Length: 226
Image (cartoon, rainbow, N blue to C red; front, top):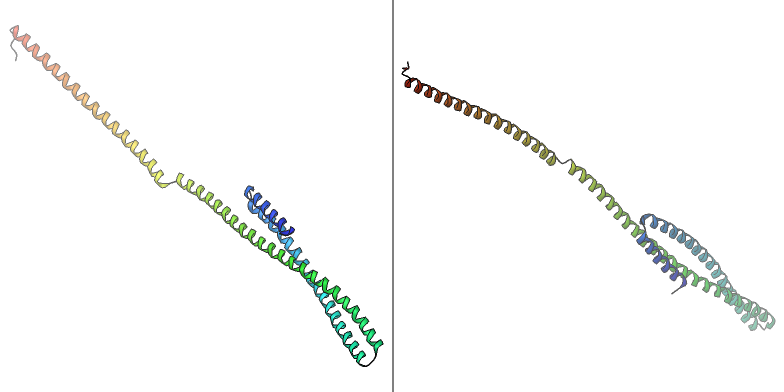
C-alpha cells in the first residue's frame, strides 16, 4: 500500500467520522468536494506536465538511438573501406550516443512509472469525488424530505385546528345547548301552569268544603236554604 493511499484512506475515514457528527452534512460535503476538486485539478495539471516531459525524454532517447545506430553503420562502412581511423571516430560518437540513449531511456522509464502512479491516484481521487458527490445528493434528498415533512406536519396541524368537522361539532354543541335551555324553560313554564292549576283546584275544594259546612250549620239552626 502506497503512502498516498494510506493518507487517502485516513482522510476518507476522518471525513466519514465528521460527516456522522455534523449538524449540516451538506455544507461539510461541499467543503470536502471543493478541496477534492482542487486536488484533482492540481494533480491533473501535474500529470499533463509529466506527460509532456516524458514525451521530450522519449524524443531524446529515440534520437540518441537513431544516431547510435547510424554511427555504427558508418563504422562498418569505414572498416570495409579500410578506413580504421574513420571507423574509430564513428565508434567514438556511437558510444556517446549510446550513453545518451541509456541516460534518457532511464529517465523516460522513471517518468512513465511516476505517470502511472499519478494516473492511478487521479483515478482514485475522481472515484472518491464521485462517491462523495453521490453521498451529497443523498443527504440533500434526505434534508429536503425532512423539510417537506416538517411543512406537511405544520400544514396538517393547521388544517386539523381549522377542520370543518370540528367547526360543525362546536356548532352542534352550541345549538344543542340552546335547545336544552329552551326545553328547560318550556318545562318550567308548563310546571308553573300545572302548579297554578293544582292550586286553583285546591282552593275550589276548600271553598266547596266551607260552603257545605256553612249549609249544614244553617240547617241545624233551622234556617232553610233557598
